[in-house]
Image: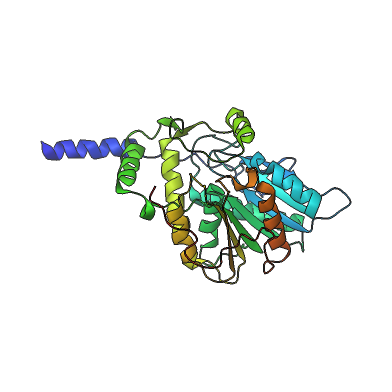
Length: 331
């Protein structure tokens, strides 16, 4: 009887496995469209763009990936500033499952998200030949960047990568209770949606921005458990990516001391394993949404200075030159 019950339990778990959204069904040529782009599988995703005022040509191109439950418009303020003040062009897609992209709320899978990043990079290289192209990833977007950069024999590389509060909170740095709860819930109740209300987590000190963010209908408010499971799988890959990165690739890591979303311990662990041309800035008054905090402009200026010269001093003076980056806290 015990064996029969165990077998039935396995069947139940298999029947409730985490779900991935389907890919497109048509094999086509990727293309840039008006306010959107088309992937190789035929799926069409929104693509928001900010350009320097004509006839000025972009001095650099930034392909920016948003965080979990967010969407491309989260880069509106820094993108407008960079276009106006530095002549940078910025492209921000709504990644699959987020914003106005297909199947909102349903996880697309890390492989598909990485494929989208590479396809879009090829398109932007063709759109802006000869211009330096940088990847910028905020939170989950940073994890997508890292997992892609760590791929062996990666033929599609940017001229540099910028990580803003990267989601590197993998299982190796999670309490056992978190790991067990996620494994069980994602395989028994993958469809269940949860909100972050009541957790007491603050993402920024910019309260008016947070109110607009909470009211934005394109920001996901209730998250499927299997989407969280997919995100943690991606964060596992991001946390492990450090030693696998090309040491010749310039990389800028930015983190806020007040970040309550991505804990200090995994960021410290990730940063300690970085080598090569790595620059790290730690902002004493920064939060998770560094690019939208009240003092966000100093972060915008640091990024702009680094893009113009990856070896130049950062205007904020917040560069961390030694380990540990900050005293580890138990939280």
